[in-house]
Image 1 (tube, one colour):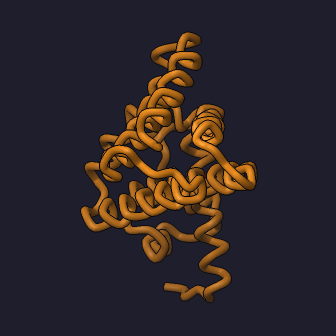
Image 2: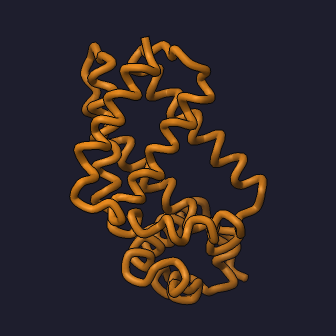
Image 3: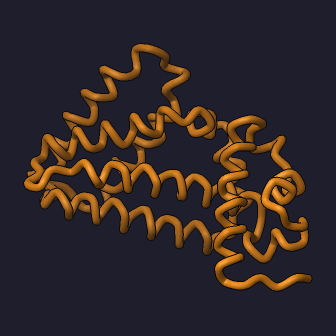
Length: 190
């Protein structure tokens, strides 16, 4: 099997993540094949496993990659002296960006299947990263939780699951969701 240099590995991994996002959007998780992802990325199916343990790991890392991209955009908009209200506004902006991604809104049906197939250590590592990212965001705003920090993290994670329900709820989603964020932020932090 061909070995890849570090720069080439990064390029191929980026192509696989990009291909996954395109295929997921077009076909969904179940109908996206490793062969198609590899063809789009210019590698063999055997080489795929040098980059990802499984299709599920690639899909989950794609979600993480999109989250990182959206997070970077949102971070740029944080005011110099942010307030609790700014934090609520930032959360709304963050979730609005996710709402624009059609495949993210459809992921709820497939996520349980994907998670069941992920290695346990992968989920632990991913959870640590999510907690770290949320902690950094809270710290950037200088917020002090009124409740246990683990509960704050869980509440923020639950909000992301609510976004996945937007299609089911329909047009009535936005105003109540905004209210929930405002109320939670007001009550969770000093």
